[in-house]
Image 1 (cartoon, protein in one colour):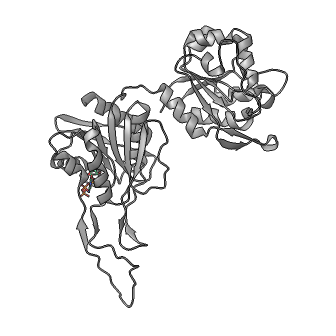
Image 2 (spheres, protein in one colour; image 1 turned 180 degrees about the vertical axis):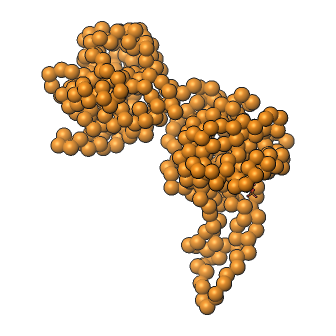
Image 3 (cartoon, protein in one colour; image 1 turned 90 degrees about the horizontal axis):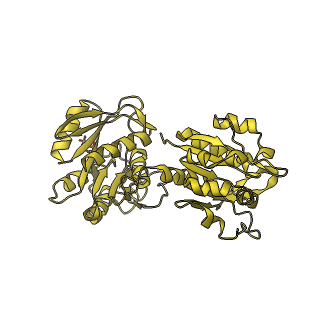
Amino acid sequence: MAAGRLLLIPDGPASLLYATELVNQLRRRGYSLQVAPTAYDGPSATAFVSELAWATLSGHPCRAIESLDEAAFREQDLILLGPVSPRVFSIFCQGKALSYLQAAGRPVLAILPQLFPDEPLPHKEGGSFAQLMPPGSRLLTGSVPHGLGALGNLLLPSFEEVLAQVDSLLAPQDYAGKKVLITAGPTAEDLDPVRFLTNRSTGKMGFALARDAALRGAQVLLVHGPVALPAPRLPRLTPLPVRSATQMHQAVMDHWQEQDLAILAAAVADFQPLHCAETKIKKGEAQELSLPLKRTPDILATLGALPHRPFLVGFAAESDDVEANAQLKLRKKHCDLICANDVRKPGCGFATDTNQVTILAPDAPPLHLPLKSKEEVAHSILSEILRRL
Ligand code: CTP
């Protein structure tokens, strides 16, 4: 779960459907949230959504904008201005709020709707909105149409973009400067132009690792097989989609030398068809079909055998004798760590949102992590790796 205290200052009609949903999503993610809605004669946040509704949604009593002094801003980890309107800008510039905000020095994330093409945010003497925000602040402009009922559409950033920005502003930057390669998802081994062999992996665990590492400052190369999940869109994260085990192996071989760390979370097919038919295999009169298969390259073992390899972390998906089998893989593939999970346990393994892993190292007792969301498991794994890097 993400942690941090946020103050949201919403304004205007986008409060109605956009900012209220943003409050829900931020709370669901684990942030503690207080709202200071605008309240003036006109299309203010409280004209669209009552103070009681904001307090109920956020779980905290509302703050009045006029009561926000330097200490109130300093208490927060992040101030979320959004969506920003010329009205909010003038509220900030007229009273002392702007000087308090600047003095508190907390980062601001301002959500700018694309509503005012002809009405740009005003410039106060001494600078534009962006220049007046404390250092480290970010402006996020809208590009996705959000329907506001009878009020029409407003271009606003997607919730995913806002959450990613909030997460990255608040995440510890303990991976800054590190280069990390992650493999994720299944591979697909083609039999003919329409058929292939694959497995149940969805890529969730590997994607969670990539996201968390990028948020913590790492430069991440995410080599992933065919998945339905969209790859995380974050600064410093480069997705590299591949299809087969051979392609994944090649992509890793092309890039391992630049990396400080490689985490191989992909469920790589162990076998591929000996030949991929050029045309669709016809059943004809056959009642049985045998497919000759050959071994795929073992990416983890290949990296483990290299003399100057990056810090190497593998995964072991097991259905029996979990620790013993994982220990065997750890030694056989020469990893620094291996994360073992029991795919038969409820809430673990493929296609679930949670996981329970045991981290094994050659020189330390097993570390049993509790059953947690894959995001939290990813965070714990990366913290454990960092202690050893
Ligand atoms: N792995 C890999 N290349 C392969 C097979 C596996 O890099 N061709 C990696 C996986 O990404 C994982 C680890 O090896 O980090 C263990 O994968 P797993 O499927 O649990 O084990 P296997 O080595 O395939 O052994 P088995 O299927 O016999 O349990």
